[in-house]
Image (cartoon, rainbow, N blue to C red; front, side, top):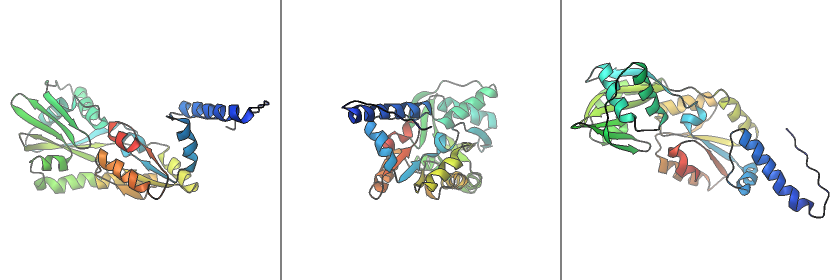
Length: 259
C-alpha cells in the first residue's frame, strides 16, 4: 500500500530519503525480495528488461519424476544408481530422483568421488564403476552413445519434460524424465511487467522444447535454452548493452548471471 512519511525539520530530505528506502526494503523483504544495497533498490524503477530463470523461478521448483525409461537395466536398478549419484547434489532435479527412490523403498549405495558440474550433471564412482547422470548432451560429450535414442529423448522433451540420462562406464542405462509446474502467479507477473513496458526473457539450462513450453505458458517470447551458468552471465551482459536488465533466479547456477 501507499506509505506517506511527513517530517518537519531542517534536514527533512536527508532523513526522509534513507528512511523511505529502509521502509521500502522492509516491505520487499516481507514479500521475499532482498535488496543488497539502497542503490539497487532505487535502480529497480529504471529497469527495462527482466530476465527469468526457469526451474525454481518461473516454476515451483518442485519437479517430480514422471517417466522412467530403462534401456540396459531394470527400472529399479536404473533409479537406484541414479539416486545414489544424485544424493550428493542439491539441485531440485536431483532431489526429485532421490525422493522417488526413497518413496519406492530403494536402498541407496554409497557413491564415492562425487563431482557436480553446474548446468551439466554429476559424476561419481560406485565400486569399480564410473557413473554419470546429467543432460543427454553432457553424456554425449563424455563419450556415451546417445544418438541411438535421440527420437525418444525428443519425444519426452516435446511434452515439456526435462530428460536426464544415466550411464555406467560410458554405457547408457536409461532415461529419467522429470516435470515441474508453473508458479500460479508467473503468468500474471509477466503480464504486469509487459503492461509497464518492461520486456521479459527466459534463460535456462534446460532443453529448448521444455523452455519454450513454460515460456509460452508464462507469456514470454524471448527464450535462451541449454545455457550453462557462465553463458547466462554473458547473455545478461549482452542484453545490458541496450537496456537496464534485472536477473531473477535462484540457486548456484544463477549466481554468475546475478552477480
